[in-house]
Image (spheres, rainbow, N blue to C red):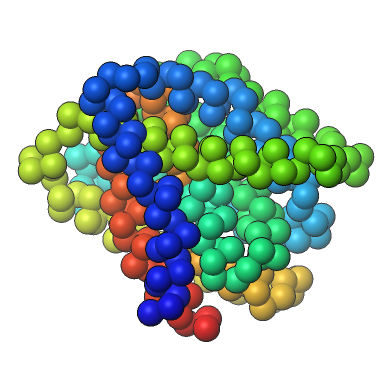
Length: 304
């Protein structure tokens, strides 16, 4: 029970931002663009650069490759759900929902609570892979829910992530480090990003009629997503152990929790920016968050 309590207390302030965002949108206090534009063009790029610069190189390569492959391979269960189980949702939003894992906003407080501060470094390495996939390929997938493939690629060139990741990797190659004086500021920005991401989710829930929702659809989607992610992660980690064996016990434990994480808030931020399938994106995130609040502590108990 201590594991559950510790996790819930660490996440509670962020979860409270969802109903606050709902209220802000319902009362029309501020436009949504005031939140998602600073996130996309200022705050998230700063965090991406900082995370890349602080990650250890060998662990960065191994964990980033595993997490990138996990995100990529999750496309196929999404296609299976759409073709064989339920095709009532948007396939491009579904692909991104399967591939996005909330490694930063949900993961950092979770890992701190379960493993301590040092484990955040491992999470940062994992984040690089998910960010590389989600902020480029994933963004194109979300854009395709509204535009043609050609137009979607043009849209991704309008946001800074592809340039920021290239810049971050170049700085990493030249062994540039985040200045000590800047680190406390970046830490605060990380909290602000988490808060703003949750506000966007709440704002996207406005005007949804929960009684008329297709609950079976969301149940099937999230059930297949969780099972598929666990199987794919286990296979990738077994392959890493067989071929490289470059991770320690705690790093493997942190990586093993990733498939239990909810869908990343980026899905809501991107869909809001593109004004495409905003409600479906928000619902997938919220329902996956509820599921994760049960699955992650259960997973942590296995490692305890």
